[in-house]
Length: 168
Ligand code: QAP
Ligand code: CO
Image 1: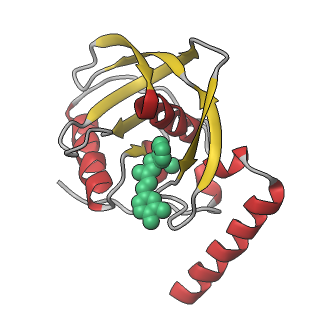
Image 2: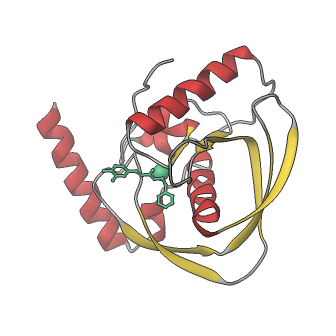
C-alpha cells in the first residue's frame, strides 16, 4: 500500500471531469487500497480519485466514529430524495485549513459498484449523504469552494497560492 500525493486548490487538474471505470480489476483494487490509506494518513473522511490525479469515477469514504469502516463507490450515481437541505461546515483534503458552510440535500439515493464490481444501491442521510455529495462533486471537477461566494473563494485561492509559493 502507498500514500499518494493529494492535489491542492487551485490546481487546474482538480477541474477534470472523471471518466467511468470500465473494469474493476486488481489494478483498480490496488488504487482503492492506496486511496483508503491516503485518506486515513491525511485524517480525512472522504477522498475522490480526482484528488490523487486519477480521473476515473471512484471515491472512498469513512464516516464511522472509529475510522474503521471504509466504503468504496465505483461509478457512483446519486439522486436527491428531498428538496430539504442541511448546512454543514465542510472542509476538503485539497483545500487544507479552510472550512465553509455548504447546503446540500439531506437525503440521497446512490447507485454504485463495490470493490468487486458488484452493483449496489443505498439511501443515505446525515454526514454520509454530505460526504458522498462532496466527493461526487470532485468527480465532476467541482470543489466545495464553488458553493460559496466568489469573494470567499478568491480569498481562499490567494491564501493557498501564497502557501504554495512558500512551500516551493
Ligand atoms: C469531505 O473532507 C467532507 O482542512 C472530506 O486540515 C468534509 O476529509 C465531507 C481535512 C466535510 C463532509 C463534510 C481537512 C483534514 C479533511 C482539512 C475531509 C485538514 C485536514 C477533510
Ligand atoms: Co474534497
